Every structure is written in C-alpha cells, then in structure tokens.
Image (cartoon, rainbow, N blue to C red; front, side):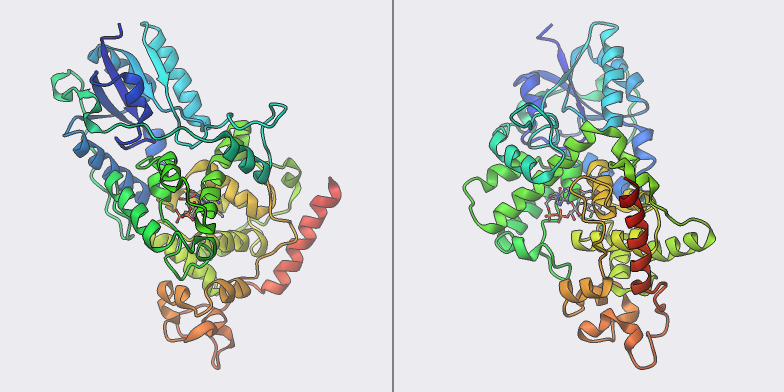
Length: 459
Ligand code: FAD
C-alpha cells in the first residue's frame, strides 16, 4: 500500500515550498496533484478573487511543469473518483478548519473510506492550527492578548524543506479523468496583485526591505505603502505564515514584533471560528441580536452610497473605491468604513461583511466576519460600543496630508492638504460631482450610542 501513488489535493496551499503534505506523501513518491474547482466556493467569490485564484493555479501548474489536474465539481464525488483512477490509497491535504471545509472533508473522508482509501491531514494554513493554543487548564481563548502570549509560547514548526521536485508528479493526461481547463481570468477592471508563489516571495522581500522596520507605526497610514499586502497570498497559501515567521526569527525590532502580532490575529480568528462556527453568520455575543438596525428603501439607498463610495465622507469613500479599484483595502480604512456602516448608517454588520467578502481579493471568512464584529462591538475583544469612529478625525489623523483620499477620489484631487477631509466646508461646498454628506455624523453618533446602550441595559 505505501508504495502506491499518492494524491495531493491542493486547496488553500497553492505552493510547493514549505509543503508538509509533500513530506507526508514521502520524498520521491509517485504523486498526482489535484485541485477541485468547487462551485460552492468559487461562485460566491467576486471576480477579483476568482481572477487571483486562476492566476495562482496557473503559477502552481507551471511549477509542477504542467502536471496539475484541475477538475470542476463536488469534491465528495471528484476526489474519490480521481483517487480510484490514479490508484491512490492516500489523499494528502492540509487540514481545513472553516465550517464548510470541515464538513466537506468529513464527507470526502467517508466516501474515500468506502473503498479503503484514507484522507491524511498534515499541517494547516496557520502557524499554529486552531485548537492547539490552550490555557493552563486546557481551555480555549476568547480574548486575543492571552491567546497571543500562549501562541508565542507554543511556537511553530520550522518550514518543511520541499520544492516542486520533491515528488514524482504523474502526467494527468495519462489518466482517464476529464480535466477542466484552469478558468481564464475573468475580465477585471481592478488593479490586482501578481498571483502565485513567486510573486508572494517577491512581495515579502520588498516589504522586509522597505517597510518592516517602521511597520509598528507605518501600518496605520493608508497614504503610505506601510503594510505587507500579503493577505491574498496568505489566503490562498502561496506562502505559509510559518515561512514568514522563520524569516523573522531573531528579529527583535518593534516592526517584527508588530508583524508577528498580526499573524497571531489571523490564527486567533481562525481559532475563534473553529470554536464557534456560528459566529460566521451571527453575533458572537448574542446579546447584540437585540441591537436595532435599519432596513427599507432609505437603508438600501444609504447602503448603495456606501458600496459605491459616495457617502460624502472622503476617507470612507476613498476606502470603498480602493476596494473596487484594487480588491483590497487598508486595514485602518476597513475599520473606518465598517464603523461608518454600522454606527453612522445603522445597518447590520453582515450586510457590509457580505460586500467585503465578494469584493476582497483576500476575502477570508474568519478574518472578515470577526473583523466586522470587532468593529460592531459584538465580537471577541470588541471595540467598546461607545467608540464611534469620527470619519473626519480618522482621516485627518491617518491621512494627514490627504494623499490617500486624493488617490481614490478624483473629484477631490484639486483640494490641497487635509482640507480634503471636509469638502463641505469649502466656500461653495463640495466640488461638482462629489456628494454632500449623506448623514450628520454628530447626530448618528448619538443614535448609535442610544441603541447600543439599550443592548447593554437589556443584558
Ligand atoms: P499586514 O498589516 O501586512 O499584516 C500581515 C498579515 O497579517 C495580513 O496579510 C493578514 O494575513 C494578517 N492580519 C493583519 N491584520 C489582521 C487582522 N486584523 N485580522 C486577521 N488577520 C490579520 N483580513 C483578511 O485577510 N481577509 C479579510 O477578509 C479581512 N477582512 C477584514 C474586515 C474588516 C472589517 C477588518 C477591520 C479587517 C479585515 N481583515 C481581513 C484584516 C486586515 O484588514 C487585513 O488582513 C490586512 O489589511 C491585509 O493587508 P496586509 O496584508 O498588508 O496586512
């Protein structure tokens, strides 16, 4: 049995370096590389993420010298069929911890088991897999700071020393399995990052050289290239966080510390989702089910203005337009735009989360839903409910010269300096084509506080 072909089923690990599944298959083993285009995952992704995925698959196929088999369909049917055709007794995967991924893998495991085949899980997309970081009494964490401490104490494995030549890849054309061509990249208007493993490593090198040292402060400035922009690559596993952490080993600066903390947030939210799969769709803190939110034609109109970047609040509009233009938004601005939707427009956080998930090239259920709930106050470590971001002050503080706004809102390009954050104060009002504010922030802040106070009082 051990001498049989191995099937390596790629999912969120579209790379050949640091690949524990290759180690599990065994060096030099005959292996078939498979990716299943699962309509249930591909369909809800917006075109930016589908574009990026196609590019990553093409890059992986090139690394494997054209030996990646892509098949469209339900993995519960496709994987056992391909395993049978390839004569593979073991199917190697990195464990998936999302609610859908776990249920899918259990179903695939059962189907494989029916004719004596095994699903072998090795590694995960995280530095430390969900469920591993435990308190002294064996419990799971619900707050980030103690999680982070225990996460650092737990540590992570060194990167697996693998490359494309580690396994002896079978030519899928020799099998009687109908392959699906890698889907052509859908036409996109957005300017998206180069997909694939090599691009991930290039990005990481540029970030380490130019921005890591100042990252602790620079990460809050959307007007500067101060963050790694690695999120799409981490999402699809073009690079593993363990590889990044290994590169930072021994780096003691504030920048490296802050960067490690962000990777800990990524692991933390995956752990929280694993503990509470329901938190992907519902309030983590169920007392927030009682929070009053708006609906109806006026709510729909405001929601459309938010999505299109036409709220009249420049930093909010710049963020929403960056999302449309690049499939990505700076973290500080994700917080500002999310706060605006929840606390100025009084709309349910999941409306915004759904829009982000479609539009983001890095759209990730754990990070997105919990990032939204952090802002809405209903999640773990939630921002205190009385903290309502003031979009003008946030803009002036984190985009002090207005460069970020002018980059994404051309109607405001003629306004110099930080005056760009309050175009309604210009003599004659906002420039032609740019809307007046859709709400009065001071008033909506009071409305939000009243509604949040009602939730607190009812607990
Ligand atoms: P860097 O600052 O360079 O950070 C390095 C890596 O750490 C990121 O690539 C990411 O993998 C991880 N990371 C950083 N911050 C966080 C965080 N707060 N939570 C979890 N992981 C983090 N991140 C996603 O990857 N996908 C999402 O769908 C997503 N949705 C979000 C929605 C909201 C409302 C908020 C407030 C945050 C969201 N984030 C999401 C987290 C964060 O905004 C992005 O990870 C970050 O902006 C990506 O840019 P970067 O790679 O340059 O980050």
